[in-house]
Image (cartoon, rainbow, N blue to C red; front, side, top):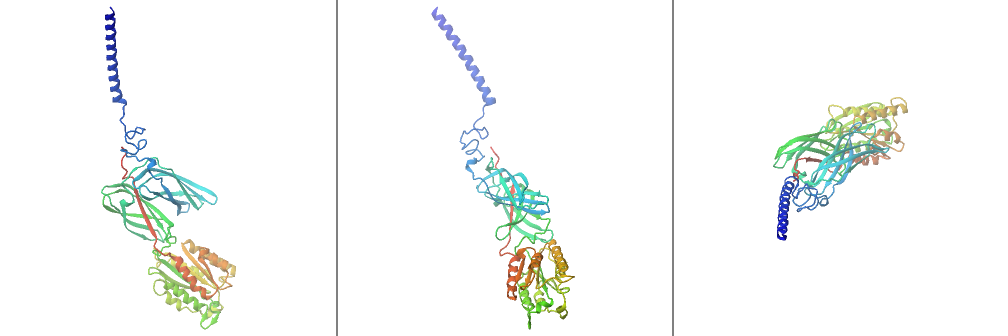
Length: 458
């Protein structure tokens, strides 16, 4: 009897084990069929050969701990038109191959009263280089930004990219019509073996010291492999006055006071006019091959004695004489400025060149009308010239010259000079020569970046 009970228990155990095995097999099959995931790069776990959670090892995604965060090199705002600015920052990525497909940022523009506005967005950050972040046409109303800051959120996703700065070459570039409707033309080359899509290209013009002066942006939708494409950057307002490089030519009108007081110091040779002519002729002779110069003289009336050109201005200056009637005449500074400004707006003006007036006078403005009226007329003429993007350098000659008036005529305090003696005149003209264009060429940095080249995540 006992043997029968043992045998029944054994059979029940066998049945139970069979059923358990069956259910385990079915459950295991269901789990593996519908729920099991092999260790991989998207399971939110550090497994397999990963260096971190879903990054490193055989995963394409690069661990944040393995990369250097991007750093902001500078941020500035550039006027487009009144009330509109382009906000630009240069951000450096020192990682040789790691790139960020999404970089979020916020620009904040300030003036002395505080925050003007903010603008947020996102962009890409290719590897191994400095890249611009460009936020275009930021509205500022009547306020002028004096400081621009950018906050860049550290990217959460890094992955390899094969398209960096070295993927492209700027074959040539030409800046034209800088004093009218500026255009920067460039020939850009895709050095790669594959098509590059959605290429954003930013051009920034730097002065010789590395300060950014102007910037613009364009796009190339599809860029064939091993090919060149022509691109153009434009500005709605002149930039000739902003870009101080000697590569941008200058059209200069030299305006010289020839009223009677200009030969009062001594009669033979008449001074200070003789020393002024010598210094002015030397100034013109120092101009570059692409520069043009013209000459205006003014006493009671103004006269354009030399039209804009590049050959005879120095000779004309040397031949200037003070007319006898000027001895009892007046000083019409405003007419001198008007005559010089009109020539700079003539058909002889080179649209690639900046416009400059260099004015020298030893006295008060006395025509037309009384002194106050004459000064107001001259200041109005100067403001009208400045409104046409003409720079005015003003030299006051002698100890009795009214420097407050001279300073107001000039484009800025740095454009205003007092020559206490004729010996100072040549030095001042040399200073103006240096101020017109900097030593060293302007640097035009053209930087493409593309959404192509990111190695797909797997």
